[in-house]
Image (tube, rainbow, N blue to C red; front, top):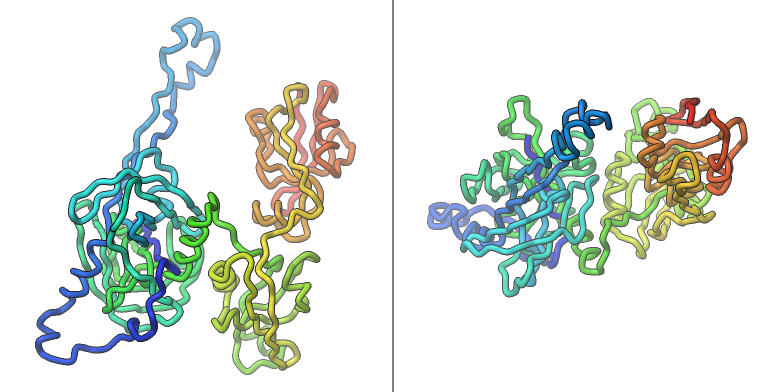
Length: 461
């Protein structure tokens, strides 16, 4: 099943006049078909060959020190597995910035990029994000490359003609045509990407991942990332990541970010249903209903409260949390978004600053040392930054496991666990956990919360 990343904002946003679409005006234009557009756009779409080295699985017999010593240290050792990945990418700038899917290159140890004129470049991932399934590459010693302009994907309309360009099944660069068949698709695509997509019926197949979805002017409107299928082949439902989001990724990559930073909403919400709309006296279900707010939330500080409805962000409709997250991600850190609030039948437009999740109070991230029972265990105080990092409920308080470490994992600890007590002693800070796990006795009991359930771990040292 293929995933195709849809290119978001971009290096250059095409001017509205250049983005305007039209039907062929003459028999000559009809005879030409898409050839002029493809000639202009195809050189900016590249083939990507990635190599991923994964740890091998050894014989469990040799996990026992006796057999390992008896047969020799090297006998039966797990061998690393080499996995090759094939995909596509789109050049975003003449100096060699390329966008592709995270699932194609995100974990790669070696990446080779081949252009349509058969030039080869070594590449590295400079910014990747598994959740969005986007990766920005930088080609080594590249200059003067052809690149695609990024169209404002908010102006894409259902019914527009679209072309998908990529390298399906490794047969070489291929072009397929179709239309834009849906917008604002969220939670429907399979694969790594979990967000907001443009839908197309242009055939997309394995190897198209990371390729271009362009309009009839040759401007990039999205990065192909995934399909819905029961057979593994194209059934006419493909998804692309909007170009506006790609543009923000490119901006952060140029700024030197190693990880993608999203603005923090500090809120939980749910799509408006017909029943909720009726209870609020609305004639049409629209927007996202706020169900929870963190005290440090910029939305809360701007005057929103639980029960309010957010219908638009920066003029774009939001009818699900995924759409709202997309709109805020496109706005980027440091800006101000205008959100439309619906309360008691009245609509107000309110400015909300786009900020990172604050590290307040300080997380005090702590890695336990060798003098403790669980060396390598990494814990931190729950705060907005930690909550956003691990996707925890807004109401979480206490000490959170960031990394269980080798010994913590063996006894059953998991990232996201909220520690409440060690040997019946309450822990409220990382320092409390370190103290409780230093010379604690022969038996250890850890009480914690995991996904809303209370769990008690007991083990002997």
